[in-house]
Image (cartoon, rainbow, N blue to C red; front, top):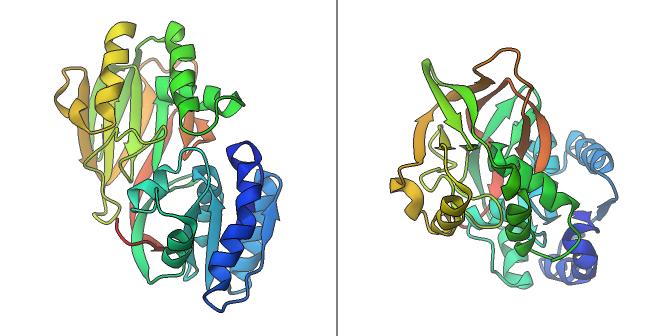
Length: 291
């Protein structure tokens, strides 16, 4: 079991005993990998996967899932998730968010499903990669220590609004190029980001495709009215929103001399533009009741 003791401002550490008890009821011996940094988490996971671990249970949020995915993708090691992080968007897409600890532990030890993942030169993505305003919100939320939980993303959104501006981007989905002025770009394997916003509500982690969602030029007040619609997917028909599906995507500034934009994925900074992603079918085995 991989644990990030700093998740939820330290509350995850207080959940460890409950998760251990829940997993222990299965009769399995549980070995805890208590990572204190991203590098340590990745190193520990890579070591146990290389050693033939049959199952790795992550007790944390999207960032820890992201770290574990880098080692388990493309292997026979099954990934289980007990969501005790802030956003838990990957767990939400799998029907795990909202379960009590005992139920989440049972699901983490349940039968595996083969799920897609997104891949780039910088690594694997479980849920969504974002560029633009949403990336700024994620970066801001990571720096906040209050409030706790998903409400950090709401506060981070308000703090980022003064810097809202569209950026000319070229988005190539498969072989079809689109030039857009984008406030936000999301490339999705699953529907959710930002603590429960279904930015790409049609994204399914079993169809071998990625979903691209773009929010075009939009004012601050309209954006504040737009975001509540994202939680239930009603933004699909908003005039500022455009979506495509495909097997791969490349995102780059229209102006080759423009400053690169940060790319965040699963709540972690992953690189800068130009950036490419492709959908890899059945890339990871995940214990989950749904997908």
